Amino acid sequence: MTADVNSKEPGINGGLVKRPSKILSQEYGTNAYVCTIQVENFDETAKRIFDAGGVVAMPKFAIPKMAWQGYFLDTDGNTFGIHQPDKNAE
Image (cartoon, rainbow, N blue to C red; front, top):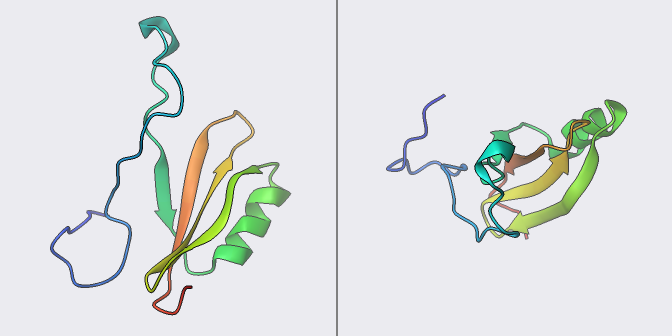
């Protein structure tokens, strides 16, 4: 799926956040990219993540009038996000 930054539809088209830790040396790879996936139901998807061994990295929060967002760690320690569009999110 390609993000359309000119779309009038709500959704996650990307974002930049301040790096939370120092940059690791080159042989460690990067810690800067976090993939976020759009889902139909945040809570159902979170349950599936927990059932597969994932844990919360940042709890569910509202992006007001746009979506529900949250971040998780997979079983290898990789951070990823899930994003449920919802114009009623508060």
